[in-house]
Length: 167
Image (cartoon, rainbow, N blue to C red; front, side, top):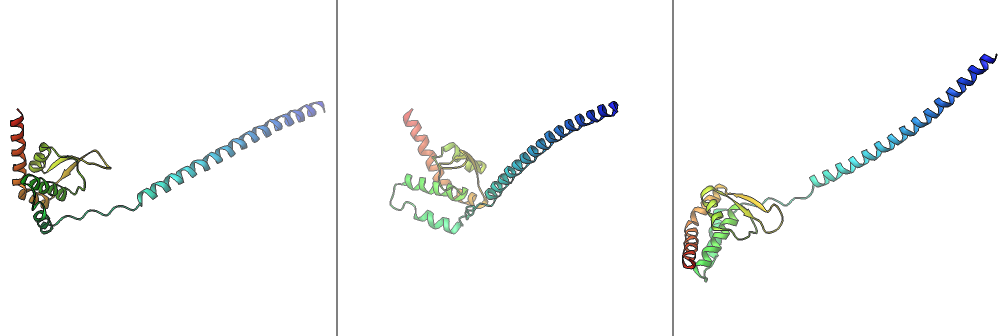
């Protein structure tokens, strides 16, 4: 009987230990479930932000300027101004119309040369966006530039003459 009593006592001790281990495991499981819910909620919020950003209202694409519209606007520029100002305004409008830019910082003659020769050049934008952006010409833009070749030559000649007079 003593032997059975000792056996029964050891079974009770093991049962208490198992019960404590079971409680610890249940606590760990509840912590893991809570952590999983938290992570899922964060992922859901992140996905909602991504979808909101993905489906935000975007600015409509700019419409290309047709050649007839371009001709009308170029005729309007500088009727009562100096030739240099007229050439500069026509050239600036040609660049903006052919590349699609709305604002530009001053372009150097070297960048204009790249635009005339290569059909692309780096342009620094004034407001938002990348600071260095490469502008490419579409076929209509190349036609605009062929028409403005005289203005470009005039601007380059003035630049060269100014450098010679300063030297």
